[in-house]
Image (cartoon, rainbow, N blue to C red; front, side):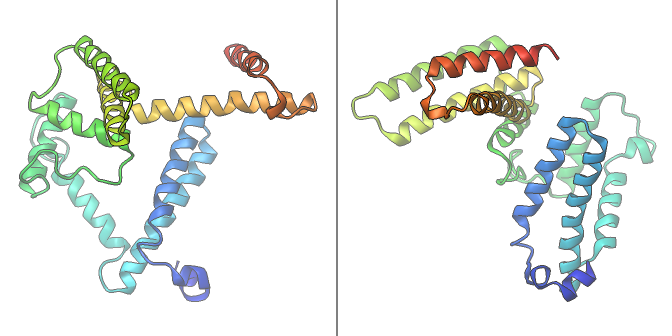
Amino acid sequence: MAALRERCPWDRKQTPRTLKAYILEEAYEVLEALDEKDPDKVKEELGDLLFQIVFQAHIAREKGQFEMADVLKSISEKMVRRHPHVFGELKLETPEEVIDRWQEHKKKEGKLKESILEGIPLNLPALLRARKVQKRAARVGFDWEHVEDVVRKLEEELKEFKKAVKRKRANKDEVEEEFGDILFSLVNIARFAGVNPEEALRKTTAKFIARFRHIEKKAREQGRKLEAMSLAEMDALWDEAKKKASRF
C-alpha cells in the first residue's frame, strides 16, 4: 500500500471519500461470491474488501490519525468487552440473551442515546435499513403479534396504493409514499418469516437475469432481435428457461 501511494498516480490521488463507493462495491461482490458458494472466489473478493480497509487505514496513518494496528486493537477490545460470557464469568445460554447484553453494552458506551433507533446507518440499502428499524422497535414490544396481522396491513396498503394511482390528479409524492408503505409491510412479513428481504430480492433479480439471458441466447440462435419477437414468443422462452432451471 505504501508503494502504491508513493508511485501510482491514481492511488496517490485517492481520499477516504473517493474510496467510499469501492468499499460498498467490494462488499457486494463478497455477497455474490458467497451466494455462488465458490471458496476461491470468496477468498479473492474478501481480499479485495480487505484491501479497501488497508487503503483507508494507510491514508489515516499518513494524516497521523490512526493505523491498521489501531483498527485491529479497537475491534479486538470491543469483542472482548461485549462478550463477557466468553472472556469473563458471565453465563448466557441463548442468542437472545447475547443480543440483550450486547445492547446494554452499547448503551454504556454511548452508542445508543435518546432513541433505540439511533445508530442505524443511513447508507444501508433501504430494505436492510427498514428491517433493522423494525427489529429495534420490536425489542421494546412495538410489533405485530402474528404474521397474519402484517399480511392484512399489506392488503390495506395495496388498496391505498391503488386508490392513489387511480385518482385523476395522481400526486407523484403520494403514490411514492403509498408504494413505500407497501415495501415496508413486505419487509415486516419477511422479518416474521425469517427471510432477509435484501437477500431475497437479490436472488430473485439474479434469477430474472439468468432467465432473460436464456431468451437473448435463443433469439441469437434464431438470428432474431428481441424487438422483433412477440411477447408470447418471449414468454414461451421464459417458461423454457424455468423448466430448464427446475431440472437442476
